[in-house]
Image (tube, rainbow, N blue to C red; front, side, top):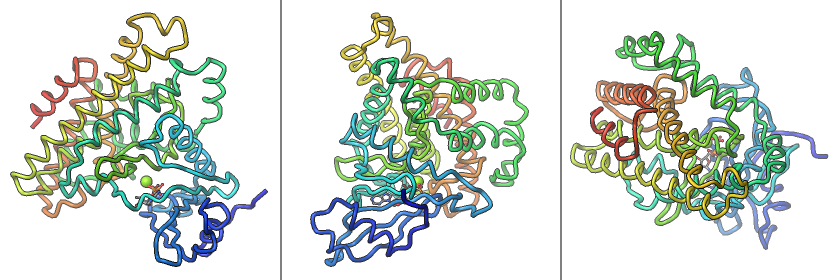
Length: 399
Ligand code: ADP
Ligand code: MG
């Protein structure tokens, strides 16, 4: 059994030679650590021609951006690798290919996606990938349908729920999404000018009951194997291509959580574009974000229904009309979780480039204000927004 040790660049090269699956392992000569500093080590492995060939990712026994004072389970590397392997089975087109992993070393080897770029960075620059919304909807439908009770045998489903029990990573979500922003917590960070808006979140009974419901469903609704953190920073894009990475929050949870996280990050960008781009480009970018969000839901829901009609194995779940009824529950969850994503990214600790990169302080504060206000509106209205067109109308109305 291999013993855990933190890899140096040289260790990562040796590991890739053994387990990288390349035809010419002796050509692998160097590694560069490219992780963006949040949680894990990520090494790109180069050959003697200077080409990057594979990626080696290793979990550290603590949260990298905080330090050893916040320990974190190494089992997350197994969960990440197994979630990606499972999702790749059902949607190879849009999931990074993990070719090897070792649970004891908390390490995995995956395809190098250097030909792609992280979507969030592209969204911040105002670059447009017209197929990305549809592709993300396809990823969500394929991975979530094929790991749900619609598709899996009940015995297999229960065994899978057990295999993907992920209490420590779930606890991070439970705290950062559903507790911190709605309490006076030291981890929260937001502009001082928004104090009264943020304090109003803590004292709004209707809002807090709605958030409690979302948290309860996150605890209890083991509907499908979620990615668990499918934001625009976990998605690589290139012309006509989209690949999802970084699934260490994977567990069986409510489908609307993944769909809502995906759409939520598009709406964060929508709120921030006026601070990032000149007015005309910002207005055009905002229209594109609304159409991306529309595409994510439309593709997700139509493909999910098509799969449900063609492949549902359970006789009760196959009853005509049930899949449609289930999707209505997923839709209101999606809106609610989308709202919590907008709030936890702005009031809570996990900030994103979309507003961090706004140079003007006043503008940044106003963009953050619109994220928080939209987030609250969506959580409160989640059961009353009929369809995706009504959602888009609400977003426009919010300004
Ligand atoms: P963490 O779990 O620490 O957030 P990520 O999986 O998000 O780590 O990876 C951090 C960064 O490493 C990504 O933003 C990306 O720039 C780079 N990266 C990760 N996986 C790959 C890959 N397969 N190919 C190329 N670059 C990658
Ligand atoms: Mg990441």
